[in-house]
Image (cartoon, rainbow over all chains, first blue to last red; front, side, top):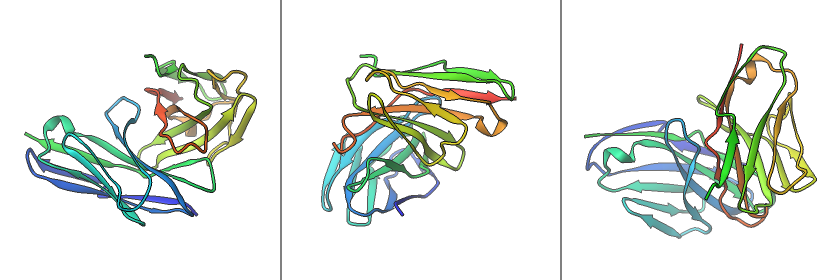
Length: 110
Length: 114
């Protein structure tokens, strides 16, 4: 069964304090792993797609990495505006559905 | 760019009432889907469509109907609303289902069933 687990559920950081969010997945052949950011009252906003182990993508203070069993979203020197819920999703090669984790709620304190 | 548009943004229903949540996209995407988001449960797939005239069930389809008569529109119907259907509903679209491209989401419909 395809599954996605995210940890931690919640994370509080001081401004400038770097950290990482984890997304572990079990899927019968990975077509793609997707990271989203969700602000309160809004729909998820696409950040990155990763396709194969060893791949990395960067955008401003965010860097996503992928291994065969997990992905990390590294946040370097976060700012309060980075506060949001970060969602991870996977799509298997054998199907056409996307499976989402429950997200990590990030709060960055000034 | 409108992207994915959902209406209404908020709705309150009484138990037993029916209603339709609207979703439209202007990106010519083949793949469209409906999710519900509940605290601690993440996004759960209700129904999806891989193209006009083709729909299929997701993880939690009971109590919901969909149809896809055009590429642009994918409405979700609640047949007889129940309090357990109180949730935030998101519509998403992407290129063909096997394209490994990300989904784009609307801003949701917040639905309360009394």
